[in-house]
Length: 168
Figure 1 (tube, rainbow, N blue to C red):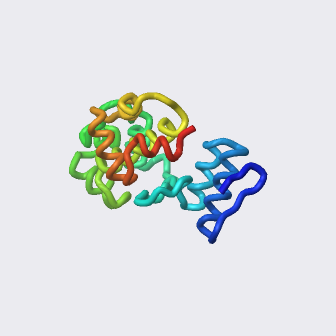
Figure 2: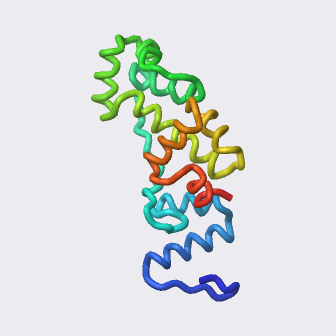
């Protein structure tokens, strides 16, 4: 509870909530969101939310064909990305690329691209008032429906609810 000069909480989880509230009040939503992610907690507990944790990126070798394709995809998220295009950048057949990619990442190339697009959309939802439809388009989703579907599936919340929880 925040009554100006007197703030209270009950229990350890509520203490963490209070800490994030103080950080948000004193340093803004961006810093509070970073603290919440590092503590592996949402900045607002409303129930039913997925953990909002930034994914670690493993270092890659410059001569790695799969890494080269992944870097290309990250630089071109707003454009259509196909397995054929990724394989071409890697200098491999599509079948070989999919096999190497899965061995390296544990997922399919297109599932990985969707995950990267979702990750790229989060800062836009957090720090801007750009309409959800334009956020999805900016990170390469073909339609607002597709963006909403994938973000909801991944984050277990809608783009609007995510923005409300993490935005300014």
